[in-house]
Amino acid sequence: MNLRTLRYFVVLAEELNFTRAAERLHLAQPALSQQIRGLEKELGAQLVDRGRRPLRLTEAGSYLCTEAQHILASCEQVAVGTRDIGAGERGWLAVGFTRSSMYSVLPPALKAFHHAHPRVELKLFEMVTEDHADALREGRIHVGIGRQPAPVAGCTTRILLREPLAVVLAPDHPAAAAPEVRLADLADTPLILFPQQPSARFARSVEALFRDAGFVPSVAHRTFEIQTAIALVAAGLGMTFVGESVAAHGRADVVYRHVSGLAGEQGISTLAATYRSAEPSPHLREFLDCLPGSGATISQGE
Image 1 (cartoon, rainbow, N blue to C red):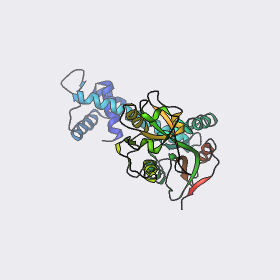
Image 2 (spheres, rainbow, N blue to C red):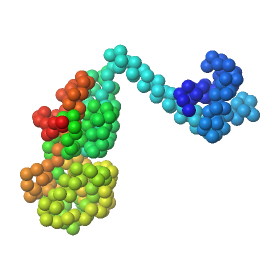
Image 3 (spheres, rainbow, N blue to C red):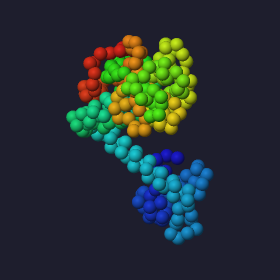
């Protein structure tokens, strides 16, 4: 199945007449009929009820027509964008981001960048931090905004935000009445971790807090993303940890508490931007200028 055959089928679906469709496509009618029969054979489904006058699409044909129209429109949009970018009339920037960055650094940066560069198309891809490295290596994104990212070869990682951790508790948790809690107060509370990926550095750093305090937490659930973890806390299934910027935009059915007694970097979570050190896109530099932070780098991948 190719785009040309899909276009033939969509025109036939619009005309419901082989003769008129062939005229629109500048084809001989037998050639169009052959193309449609070949498509039906390839898909293993009858697309057109030829015994009706006018022709009628089968259920499978109606489904294919709807999907094919979306595909063709998308391809046209891609073609127009590619021509404009090639002619220097437009630009594009692909940003990978982790969900928690939407609570702090990313929205104002996107707003400022779009205001300054309205002709640059922003492609936004929500993904866990651990997926940024492959996306950067494969050229699918220009920059990844992630939490505690690992060094990536050939990339620079720049600090955007350093913030204390907060524990998320159900309102009826015994420790929720105090403005601050100690890890010891949480020893018997099940832990809900995110993201679920085994290599997730944020989840591992949370577990390390408890190990450094001398006990191993009981991990009750692992979720793919932050809002699911917080919802499970609201359901009374345990606790989770987030950066304090998340707490500022949090749900009303949970409470966020500062964790006291953490030494040094233990209770600090970092958001950072990772990008290819030799990235030629001028729009990347313009976007980086819209991001907060001191510009200090935490890694310069070799």
